[in-house]
Length: 201
Image 1: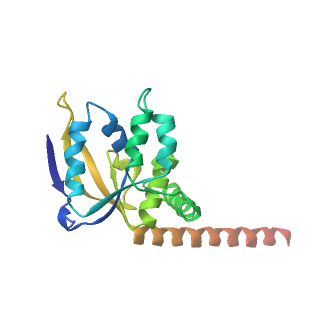
Image 2: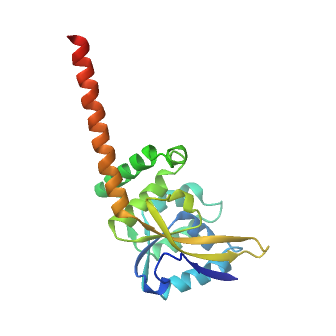
């Protein structure tokens, strides 16, 4: 069973298009016999809405470290059928900016340290490629730097329900906050230098 919901402030889902990067939990659902029937309608819905599925190459690391015993080959086969973005120099640079945003934002910094490097790289790939992220855990892509624009409610065979989110990076907010943080850091350094000079005199 799958239900769809749209963020009231967002345009209708069918007007969206572009790249959708899978979070690792989506791969986990796909290789799970229990969860695959629940996630499949979501993937069909996205595939019919002018989206291109993709992943970050960081998922290859996750496939080796996080996949249950006996599922490695299936997860690799799944990923081999999906285009992957390389984790290159620009990806690292944007990931560093995101980490700084998380660490210094007053509403996130307590939770920001819990966000994995893998999720930060996924977010970085989405930013660099103008894409969305599909995830079962929106807390790893926190507001105000990301906007959950759409969600599906899925149900597993036991009746347990949960949401799958389509999330869009808010590039302008990330850029503005990063610039503010750099200016604040530079100002603090300048003040420390002045204080040290004053003490020396």
